[in-house]
Length: 322
Image 1 (cartoon, rainbow, N blue to C red):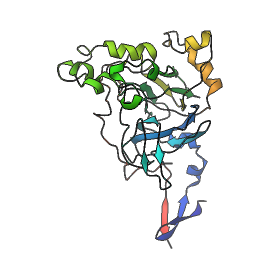
Image 2 (image 1 turned 180 degrees about the vertical axis):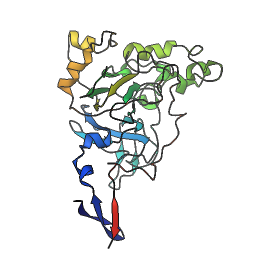
Image 3 (image 1 turned 90 degrees about the vertical axis):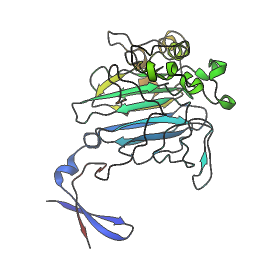
């Protein structure tokens, strides 16, 4: 028999009927994926989230050593990033020194990160058997170290990210105002050859530049320019994902392996390290990432809005006012 549960709304009381079949579904099976954000920086990070459908938060505070898990539905597409140097008052109003979303609040409300910003991008499969696509992108520059690790899925499920501190080796002409991050050449100079626009708007005509090679050398698994698909896009099926800010790096061979691209044999030198150093959970993918398809930057991306028909846990409701 269906069971009824009270639900309080601002102007009325409702009872929500949840069918037994819906109650028995696991959270993972219903919601698509769990993202767990972990802060291993020595300072507070304020993650920002932009995606469709809108999740239960678009920005929050994450102090050193803490983590927070967020559910995303099947088919979700979006990005995560870490804001730094933020100053918010008791009402949640303020701004950040790097990767600010410009909303004037802790919540980003559908606004993306102002570059430079390290981005973790995902497009989740629309069914349990469909692949997720994910990447870490430096197309809009870099502001802090970030790693993405898939957990519990099937397929290649490689670990990706940027573990090098590019703020320490950023070319002077790319350094952000006040030393706030490392800008992309597109952001710094606006030239078509750096932005992959106009006559350079194809994989054949837009090639790596001296500046994108600085990013690729430091972070070989991350996107360094718009068409950097071959070594930067990762896939996994039915996984959760962990996003770690400022992952700690060991000395010796393992630390050196963290800067090497994943080889074609499927072995992943990052996987063992992150399994020990990061919390489990979370899945994501960069959905605009088909081979030969241009990566969009913050300047090209449109704000996303929640669909009115979207129901987070995808439960079937019968609502009766009393």
